[in-house]
Amino acid sequence: MEVIRPVNFDSLAGSREFAEFSTILGNLAGITMALNDPDSSRGVFIPGSYNASPLCRLIWSVPAGSARCEACGKGFCDKAAQCGHAICLPCHAGLIDMAIPIFAGERHIATITCGQLLPSPPSESGLKEFIKRNRYLRLPVQTVRDAFFQAPYMPEEQIDAIQRLLRIFAEQVCNADQRLHELAVTSRPDEVALAKQYIRDHFHETISLDVVADAVGLSPVYLSKRFPKVVGKGFTEYVQTMRVAHAKDLLACSKESITQVALACGFGSLSQFSRVFRKFTKCSPSGYRHKHRRTAQAGPPPQTARSARVESMKRCR
Image (cartoon, rainbow, N blue to C red; front, side):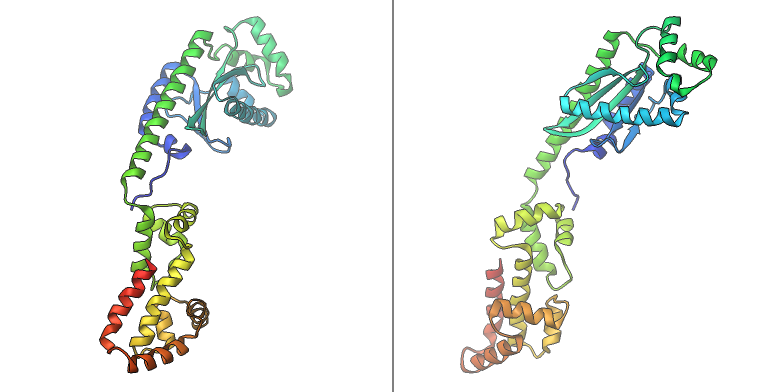
């Protein structure tokens, strides 16, 4: 069964629609754009947009400069997420950067960062200000001059337009993915019923909450919370109840050894079987077998054993 998950950083980063739109916008704007996860620990450059400012390439070539860039970028992402809207601010080097947070409902799932723009059209006075602000880099003046006059610049109205386009499109992608997720969740069969059916079919095997959750397309945490609300007992207790019911049937109606019964019902060891069986029946497996066989000899004929098993299985459900 396909696992259905709500939209998140990975699904947005892998979205064909988002990739196409951002590639077109990146090519048109001619600036670097990246998609960052909520913690700013992961980021991917948006296809077709990687055209880093020559000034940024110089700054990144110096360890002290790249460290400041990383810290500044994370700070921008955090501030945009806290504000809940796009921000446009000068970075540590004096270049203009943008951060556009993306939300799916109330969840912050990613932040788009872009920019690396000159704050004003390139000029000699602007060059002097940039060199003064970043003199710690100790870069050759001519190298900085060449990079400065090749760096991109955008008027304020164009920057505003890019921010609006990115925000609107990202919101549309998230909303569409979220609606698809909600539709899939509401239209699929009851997840707990599917989990119960899987347990009934596989209780004699080695199963766990993780295994069952994966089989029915749920997270283990969600299933562990949802299961007792619907069934009235926890996951582990339900599995044990199913196994003990089958064990009681085998003990009463078969000649298999107690160890064979334990293994046939999914218990990992004889000691575990004895402990769990006593917990539910208040007697040992051998005691149950002895008592049941004595009762069967004086009571109903053996052919009722199958119906007894059916009834015991029904009680587990």
